[in-house]
Length: 251
Image 1 (cartoon, rainbow, N blue to C red):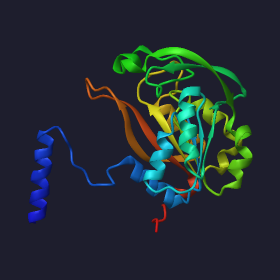
Image 2 (image 1 turned 135 degrees about the vertical axis):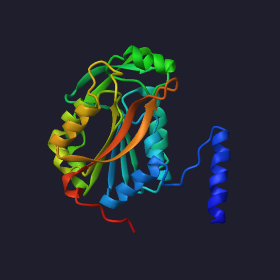
Image 3 (image 1 turned 120 degrees about the horizontal axis):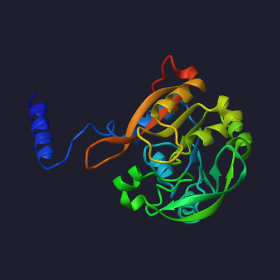
Image 4 (image 1 turned 90 degrees about the vertical axis):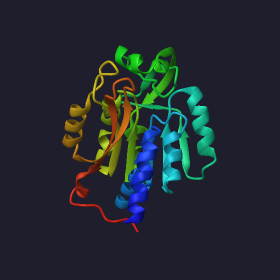
């Protein structure tokens, strides 16, 4: 009882300082993701839109030890990604974009790098995050996942696909159609409001994943408007239908 009172008063004091105290590590999205990856036995993560490798590094920090393949089309972040992967014996970096066709494309490069996209950015995004405005373009190569990595994906028992492509999620999924039945789970960024021209929004993403046989197993907050508190993007984790009846507890 005494410990509970101390914890409660400590949390209140932290909140007065503008801080929040939550249960560690379960309060962290990376920890909850790691539990899911272990529960379904993921042995390969394909990281589409890897930027400089932040996602792969987070996977490692939270305990994932399986294989990682990261795709990044832009030259500058790819150099940093490649360096990070080179320090890891089970991580490979590929200088490619993923989409529904094999072709040369033009990518809009954002000032903050992470908001770069094949799609045009809308004013709402640029207003909320001015550093995300596009500054230039760069030519890159795009390939379908099922031709680029199809054979490799089939060599693993339970591949997991992460898509962070700033509104370009639907074409990425279309280009993985021939290997979709072999994918155990998908983590995907979803926008609640239009941020890029032509992107699909949250409800459409849920419907599309349901059509493909995947159910929503987890959500994490992503990008919000600091001025109003409105949530603009979330990250969803979807699992194949075979796991709908429950996941095994990791040991």
